[in-house]
Image (cartoon, rainbow, N blue to C red; front, side):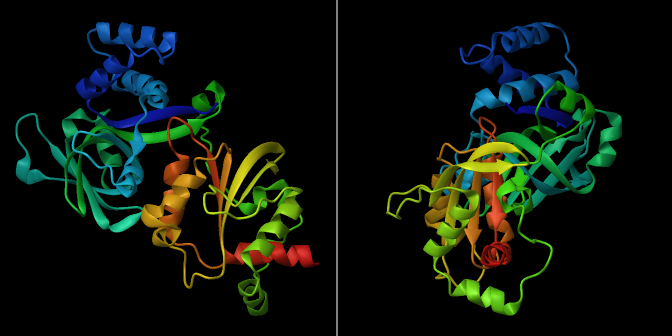
Length: 338
């Protein structure tokens, strides 16, 4: 079971304490967590790092969705607590400075939708440590937990409770040494693809041959390489095109669900090519799999990769994901043909 570890850069103690206070009365919360929270909140002033540790333990039970996901689901609401992890630009707003107030703004296009503007403001007086100020200048990839206070069609304002670094770790030892686990898996890490030469680029003729290969043939070829003998026929209500428990990542067996997109779509894969609001990704992640795979015949846009990552980082159930674009697909077929 993966754990969430948070390193605070900014933390609003009152907002986080209130969030933890609500969580402690839930029956789903572990008894040890409730006792820790109750003890800390009864003390005069838990530190930002203590609150961040408790928040990391509580997040899997809080059912907080990533902002990009609820945006695509059309369920944005003022007052909703959301999470978002991506690069933001930070800058001091000296026009609003006053006694005890050092406003700092953060802003960025949303990682899955470049025409959507995500922004917010917070008081730099609440930074976790004095040295943190230097870490929140210019562009920085961070994890933000906050409440939607305002939104229009293409603008979303968040009041942050926490800004910092989110890591997924396997155990206490990894947490101690700061060893985080990447949720993205690359094709070369799949044991069944060990015979595939991913280093040598495909020739134009190999890529052209892929474009004349049917989706069903690609699916069955990959299933055969994995060792999966059962390949279901496509039908309208499917959540994935291939489900198998025979994949393994560096010696560890995992169940995987695969979504194949055939040669019919021209150009790079975008979120819009994955159904209304990208709902094919949503259906893929409803499968009981530990690894979710998206395959396409051509380039896969960064926004799609980011959307797969958003779903993978769902805090109640983090999972691994893999992207298989046209180049890597052609390399796999090349290895099979040898």
